[in-house]
Amino acid sequence: MKVHPTDNLVRTLSRVDDASLAGFADRPGARRLMDDITAGPVPERRSRRRLPRLTLRIAAVGAVAAVTTAAVSLVMTDDEGRPRPAVPGIGSVAEAAVVLDHASAAAKSRPYTAPGPQQWLYTKFKMTAPAHPSGIATGGPYTTKSWELWRRVDGKNQYAAYENGKLGKSPATREAPLAARFDPLPTDPDALLRKIGGGNDLAFHTLGTILAESLHPPATEAAIFQAIKLIPHVTATAGVVDADGRPAVSLGLTDPAGWLRSEILLDPKTYRYLGERSITVQDHRVDGKVTVKRGTLQFIQVREAVGVVGEPGERP
Amino acid sequence: MTTAAPMDDRKARFEALYRETYEPILGYVLRRCPSADDAADLVSEVFTVAWRRLDDVPTGDRARLWLYGAARRVVAKYWSNEATRRRRTASLHPQLRDEIAATVTDFTDVSAIAQAFRQLTENERELLRLVAWEGLDHAAIATVLGCSKGAVRVRLHRARARLSRLLHATGFDATPVTVKGDR
Image (tube, rainbow over all chains, first blue to last red):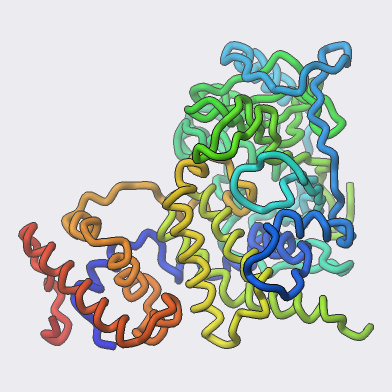
């Protein structure tokens, strides 16, 4: 096929070149997506016109060992542990400032030992998300999955994880995962926020990931909390929410339309990163058809364990 | 070693397919969707379709074309009725979102080329994109779109001619880089 001059012009409109994505299939997010998909049910052969796949997924969930159906606990408790209505509050910016100041103070007084060059960072996460894999969740069924990951901390960007009972290591890559891409992290909150791309909602998520996937020196962790404080519209709720059985303080950003809130969950005593959650805070009509009730969980991710170890396969 | 069960076969086949096509499909989606959150969900949706319909996926390079076809439908649905519902929604695949976030930029291209391009119909645009962005030829495009090679040839000729005319109308010479005088 002959090349037409306009082809080259159209090519200039492209945002991303395939060549720049080389190696992306081996990254943890991509590999996890593959695992998530293949953990799903094997559909039977049948005609295209059939039951929605939602029902199929529920039927097969029990058959997959790694996946368990979960009645997701969304009970909020007050300071005395008494349950409160399940609908999460949005809270206020002022409350967020107080929480974040406490969090940076706590971070500064935390004991910290820098990992050595041969060491690995171990994390264990648990994620509860709709069994139906995309779009807005209008309710259950949810599936819960947990995974362990070892990440080399000497800048070599290598991962290890169990696959089918065998510990596998990824090849070391030049490209860093998001959590490490901005290393070294500035200890000045303004500089930190600039480095990760400014105070927008993506920065909020990026800081969440940076907290989730690493353990930071006290001054850095304190700067992360202060940087979150600089992002406009971040609010905190006074109440304590239940992060899958553990009490949590939530910091969150509510979307401009006011119905969906993305949260970073912190331990209310130590202010350590506990997890992330996305939940509706108002009834919302989607495409004029479906109503998503407020208090509908979109996903919750809880970091069950984190620590520095000597070898992949070791746990702290 | 135990005997491979059909489930293992299926999984192995999907994993090979995934490894082979993940990057071109991610590229396809990222070029058409400026939000990393949404792109992560769209990529997930494309491969979920492939997993569900693995028996329908052809072998060899035609697998990639089949997936482009699936991706085209997923992205088209996103831009029509699902656009409003998905935008500004945190991805269900936060790790994947983070992984691809740095590759996408949400900007409005105000160049003469972009403006002329926007005046084409979506079908014309997609045809030109498949040529210029995915590097597909007539036969491959025919497979992706599910139409005949002849139809692709005619429609592509028209789309290129229209884009050239639109560029000339805005005072832009469509042949700044002459490729062997072919115009």
